Amino acid sequence: MANNKPENEKVGNQDGNTRRDFLKKSGMITALAMAPPGLLAASENKWDERLAEYLETVPLSLEVNGKKQSLQVEPRTTLLDLLRENLQLTGSKKGCDHGQCGACTVHVNGTRVLSCLTLAVMQQGAQVTTIEGLSKGKKLHPMQEAFIKHDGFQCGYCTPGQIMSGIACIKEGHANSREEIREYMSGNICRCGAYHNIVDAIQDVKEGGQLS
Amino acid sequence: MKNFQIVRASSPSSALASSAKDSAKYIAGGTNLVDLMKKNVTDPDRLIDITGLDLKKVERVDGKIRIGALAKNSQVAEDKLIKESYPLLSLALAAGASQQIRNMATVGGNMLQRTRCSYFYNTDLPCNKRQPKSGCGAMEGYNRMHAIFGASDSCIAVHPSDMCIALAALDATVVVEGSKGQRSIKFADFHRLPGDTPEKDTTLKDNELIIAVELPATTFSKNVHYLKVRDRTSYAFALVSVAVALDISGGTINEARLAMGGVAHKPWRLTEAESFLSGKPASAEIFRQAATLAMKGAKSYGGNDFKLTLAPNSIIEALTIAASK
Image (cartoon, rainbow over all chains, first blue to last red; front, top):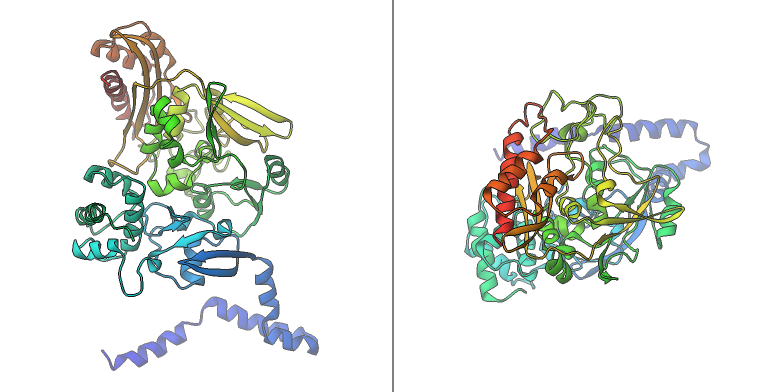
């Protein structure tokens, strides 16, 4: 298998030429043929493309995991895409992208929300906390510790959302019984079915009384 | 999702002015609108972000309770005034969506959410509500979730909100603002039946903006219940739901309020059953008779035949639980 790897990568690169890349290149050739010489430098630097992109974007400043971020984003960018694509914070997961699974749950100004249904441009000045913002250095958040201790996951895809939701569930005062936890965690789907252990983990943290 | 312009409104009047141009839509929680835009069910050129408007309070005004249109669903569900005076509303709100969505969704937006009919959501299929005159896929298709009351030949979709079922039972009033000023709409008249124009969910005119919902001074604080029957215990739309508020003294019902969700294009108020219950003893037999009355005129479409049994049973169950509190 190891020997095949470079070859596979090579094939991958050839196939990796997307339709978009092709259109860009062929567009560029046409543009070069028609453009007066003075424009050549501009087109080589893709200034026209950059300008078009810039005009479709709006400035956005917000704080993510305690760090100030100033960006230019398209109005249609969701908070989830902003986190994953622009800030490379890929802990928040894109499960359904339609508000049905809870894998994208983050805290905005201390409240749990679905980042896939949140438009980033509407979060001007907001304080966002993602799964990446929970640990203190190498010390995990008590809820992260509890999920490990109670085996609160199998594949792990829903886990960041479950943990963000679990912390909020306790903060909101909705973790007073197993039934209440199950009801208030119902927006986070786990297709491996680790629900029993997830409830154990949340109960453990609730009883331990440590939430940071 | 198609890209769009977004502007932030600083007052209701500036929101109204911005919405007059292009195909504009107001946005607050966005939990339904953003989803519909992702699915290309709707593609506005411009969004007007109204979240900066001062419409977030729940307060007592002249004996009534006024809920700002931008109050969040979770905020209202847990508000002390609401829990004490209108626990039915609190129960209905808590039965809807998930806590994350309730934290985002506003009262005004909840009222304006679109049906979850799968034909409405799938742009490859016909739907008179999404594309007028294109036909109704549900009529002879997958119609398990669909209406048994008040449907028309052009649409059998149901209204999806839980909150609105309680607001209908509680005789709420909707305060809206348009270019000619403010007006009030009785909750029963806010949503409409499909008729020949299922594309219209409400009686809002042009670009009118919801400002608040008002609850009358009459409270039902004890014998209330919101029963929601669905495919799983939590986080699913209702197959059938029943909002009940009773005023009982010495075993006799003085006043009854009943509304159903999941059965019609609007919150379905059971006025005939309400009048019947008034002055009667709160007994199992009376509840059965009220449920039979409530089902008059019901019609099913194959997939939802079970609702003809589920609905009256739910009415009886909800009345029984409310009366026993």
